[in-house]
Image (cartoon, each protein chain N blue to C red):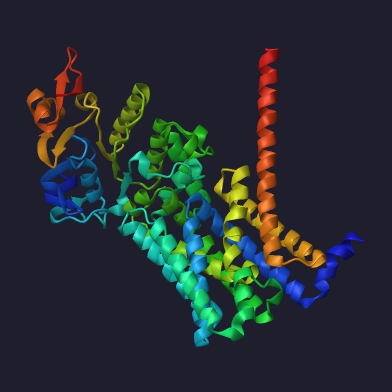
Length: 251
Length: 286
């Protein structure tokens, strides 16, 4: 069986503080995986380690069978919204074209063929009507779609997204989840961090619960229950409603 | 009559060199300035300009080519600030202001220790566009060509890094090298601009045309072309005013650029008011 992500006993420290301790985690190719956990529990650190943005103290990471830095061109990392300069004057088409740049030598410029491909990628995420709009003018869900189009232009096998659902309304979240399922069918592996526990069972193949260490891992329906969630969100008490919806409350 | 009036300055070699050299510098500085304005790096430009003065002073003291010392100090400053920003991730504007004003003051002391260079001090602080010699013009042309070529080939990658630095690094782009390249181009632009407007006013050539362009468009390509246009217009208008009214050319170019900014802001405000009035009229009619 091939794994898009294979992490073994990963320990990562940030500013002399251990953020991830002995984390082992595997994500099958062409699957949907979610990472959940409390704020500061190491979700973003894990994702950044996967693309070689943070050095590890010990352990081993294999991405698509390679070292993280070697696999970078086949991996698209979509950072948290606040890490992007949305005020920068750039159109959606130009953002998607950035995906084409990744495979080119430094002196090569985007070609007509690249522009055509970028437009096709925008069409795949239902955003072609916004091709020439500045990306800063779009809603949160639309911005995520444009970034996914960039990942498609990059021909990324693995798409890693840090909290793509933040700030989206219910409709935008559902449309994004439907897009993830569509991309999965096309063979892409999608990994996201999320605070929305309700979408997990329906859409995701596996969920990793992280609070510096692995607290839970497996198919959501099997591993998510009151006891594991309480253990994961130590300071916030998870409450499961009559329809199975999960909400977090302060103790 | 007008043609003669426009042509007259070109009867003199020094004015022709001033027009050519300053036009090239203004257009280039304005395009680099767009990145500086959009990324809020004006303080880096200012620091680079101030420390380049120290480089000029050291060059004079040691008998080096002026531009080499200025460029070295400017580039070291820009790289130092970039790494400080990447590694320390702290507010460093206060420390920088102390450092670069200190370096500038050291430059003034070095210059004052060489009485024979009193004239140079004024030229370096305020520019000496009319004193551009043929050799300097060649150097400006060479610098502009090198920077323009680097900008052309790296434009899309520089935009990627400016817009989404984390995503760019994750995708394997050489983010550190691209940031250094931007700093190199900034340093070179500052150093060649010093000849025109001097150390004190050099930021105006970088920032003002770019900021003026930003009033009219939010598209990067258009912004760069407009910025170059505003830079060129300020240069030409400034040089003509300087020629016919016998006022300092560098300062006149900067005042013209500031005037362009003020007028553009006014035009934009009037456009907004008119649009509001039209909307209000439409609402009343409905």
